[in-house]
Image 1 (tube, rainbow, N blue to C red):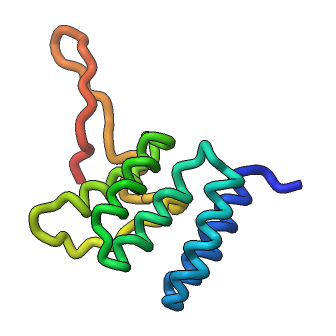
Image 2: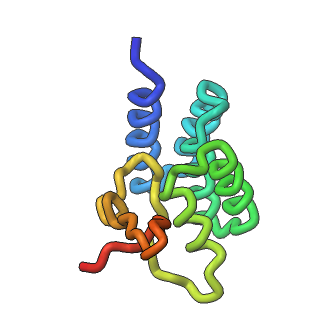
Length: 126
């Protein structure tokens, strides 16, 4: 039997394919199944947010992104999707499916200590 993470990754791959092929009704059916099978997972809601955004339903997209964030606040892809949707000007950034590892974020912060020995999280300088 597959573990939950493997099932979610496979679900995301299937849905990504449906979205890329513009088969949105099939994507929504698969997402609904994912929501039913994994009610505590944020990724299905994130995926529905992407579909809603493609359909130009920004309110619906935000509802699902916020649900996804409430379920999975550590997922940086979800937070970036919310930020992208809330931007005053279109950012031109693609929405993130939520299952991919954002290589740019890994290890991009370090802890620096001041003269009192207090640690501060700061962005790494390239």
